[in-house]
Length: 116
Length: 112
Image (cartoon, rainbow over all chains, first blue to last red; front, side, top):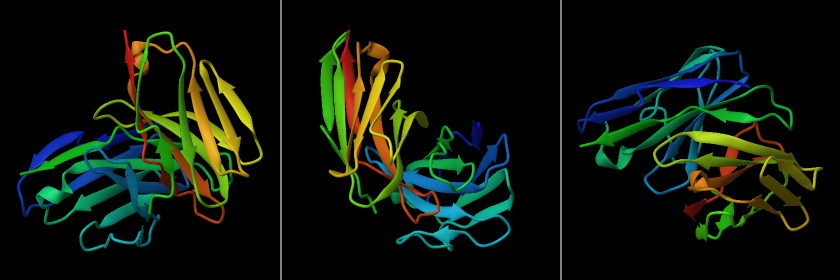
């Protein structure tokens, strides 16, 4: 199994500012992902964090708004840029070991951002 | 995009009763996973069922998968107040790079 730590766990942010969320996995994983969960909603995939290269973004999410880094196999960051109240969400990091069927995908505790 | 739908959206039962939640999806999958989320917290992995499996058990949890109907169910037996949480199914589509598509979730409330 993999233990995923996220920082910060919670933050209140001013409109127009940017915040970087860190995700650290306790073991080497092949795949890392970032999800967003808006209040009362399910999870939506933002992007796949690729080691040493640009992240792969899902429809509706762009690099300028959500720049992602993954400098090595166990660490990734997600920045939420130029925040507005609509960005108030839980942001969750997840990781998978391998890309074969049958491998569990683990999640961090999430980072709860409130934009005021 | 969300491909999974879960029903019911909300379920309220008495402690000791069984709770059944259903999930439907739209595409061929590698596997399906169920997660629990307590309010304001991260996701806790409950159980994974592969596309070639039909039923799986883990403690008080029983998961079934019917790939012909593209549906799954999660049964929690002898429920406890601590089981109160949101439950999500998530599918791992064939041909994907392990990205998960989540259902809309079921909010389970177990009354003491």
